[in-house]
Image 1 (cartoon, rainbow, N blue to C red):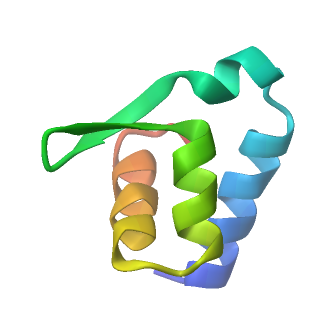
Image 2: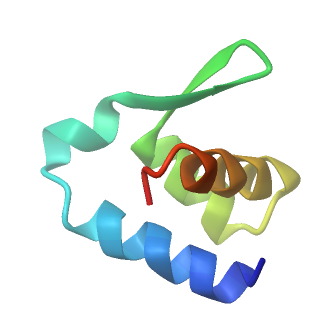
Length: 63
């Protein structure tokens, strides 16, 4: 998995979403719903949670 390409894939989808859509949950990790906005912050900061989010989004063909 190439994290840089994965982040670019995420950003391409994220930046094309309507603002209201960015407030919706897209994945659940550790029993917590993660919104597009929260995912963006975690992915931008290169956190472990951000990496888990990207993995789930790819696994479920969301990005």
